[in-house]
Image (cartoon, rainbow, N blue to C red):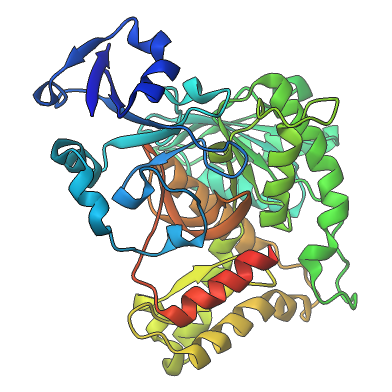
Length: 421
């Protein structure tokens, strides 16, 4: 491994092919010894992988991720390092263990955008815009207005309905309490929606009415909500948006894929990957499924193991997996929790109301704030061309997916869910 330094960035070069690909960066850098790395802000490790199915960048926190020949659900569970550890520079290994290295896939045309330009996570207040002021968008806005003051400076709002924007700007700016810091809410012109660090997409063009006989409400929304999302995915491409594109519309995971595909396809239908990168798109739907599992676990002692030991995986709907415990996995208890979480939205609908408050706050407001801070949370991340919900966080060196020692039965269930996506 060779180490080059340019400004405060360290480039870790493992072979001649990589060195050739990044020659432009190396022209302004100098070869350094490992001991000269310590004070550096950013450390980058480069690979050359297929750009369609492999991530553009991520936190390199495992030896097995260095030159993996595939990315799949194995990202969710710990694997043995094997003999590979014996072939790695011990110094570089120490950087991986310290979680200081960002892996960058040079096959992506816009890989240079990863070099120190990531707006998140940050301790500085950011600019967040919300597109869509329906039930979810309005509730999300209210939550962020009340709780986001330390992390968000301004919330831009956009909706096709001008009166909605006027109403929410006035109402939000009339929320005040002396000494309480709250973000400023401003109306946006459509041309300004990508002038932000985070764009929260909450538009829903079709929501099945209360009392309808549609069983899978979220999938019923896919076709209609895809149409409007495609427009904004193209706009993100045109704007060369570099921030986080957060999707809260249903079905979250499938719409993430729509945004990724559309943004990276040119007008002739050719995929050129010049739009939103895989690490720029996150779906926010799993947070409320976790919260619903917690709700039921608190009400039934037989399910209480979830509170301290459980995890949620998969899509915001059919295919959801609630695992009662990682260490003491019980398939029967897990399945009961899964069904309870899945039917919670129908339980609310049975009262005559649409279930949007908990999703907007658990999946949206609280999970977005955790993302901004760099905390662990539930959201959908890119794995092998799909988006799968799991526990993850954003770090200075990219997305980190929680990898645990999962039981085989749970791994098998994850494989089925992943295939169905």
